[in-house]
Image (cartoon, rainbow, N blue to C red; front, side, top):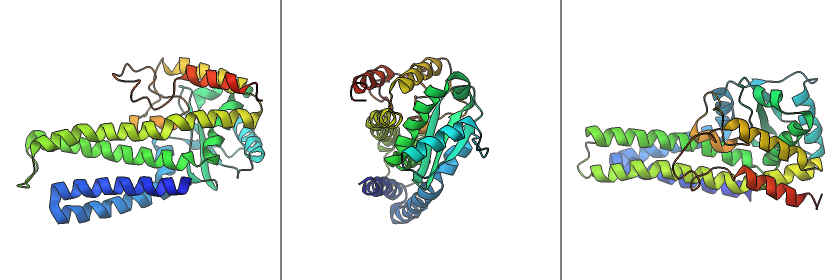
Length: 281
C-alpha cells in the first residue's frame, strides 16, 4: 500500500510540473518539464536521503560501541529490521529524523544536542520512533516530499520574479495567473508536508512505545525536545524538511496560521496519546 501511495504521489507532482511547463513554454516547455520531472523522480527515489543527510552535514557512526549505534542495533533486531546506517548531526539543537527509500536503505540521524540532552531511556524512545517510521515506509514518502517541496518553492520564487519583471514572453501568459500560482504553489508544498507528517507522527509514537514496551521514555524525550526547539533552530534547517524531524525545528517561530499548516501534531497531544497507550502496555 505504501509503495502505491508513493507512486501516486510522484505521479501527481509530475503532472503539476508538466502543467507548469506547458503554461510557461507551450509544448516545448511541457516536454522539458516532463524530462525534469522524470529526472527528479529518479533522483528523489535513489538519492534524496543522501541529499538530506548532506544538507545537515551528517557524519556516519561506524564505531559499533557508540551508544547510538548500540541502541539502534538492539531496537532494529527487536523490530525485525535490517540495521540502518546511523548518523550524528553536529548541531547543538536536539532533534532527530529517519530517511531512506526502504528497509534495506534506511538511515537514522540524531543531533549532538540530542545526545547531550537526553538520557539513555529517552534516546531509546526517540530511536524507536524513527525505526517505526522506517518500518512503515514513512521515510520514503517524507524524504521525497522534502525534495519536491523544495523544488516547488524554487518554482514559486522564479514565478514571482518573472511576474514582477515581466520575464515571461508567451503571448497567452497572464501576470495575474502567475502571481496566483506563485502564492498557491508554496501553500501546496505546505499542505503536502502537513498531509505526510501529522498522522504518521501519531503512528510512529505508538509504534515506538510498543517496540520499547514503555511510553514514558518517549514522553519525556518529546517534552524536553519541544522545550529546546523553542529556543532556536537547527543550522541549515529548511521549511521543506521540517516534517521529517521528530519535533518541528521551527517550533519557536511565530508563524501566522501555524495551527492550520502545522507539519506536526502538538507535542501535548502526542504525550497525551502516549499516556492513554500506557494501560495497553
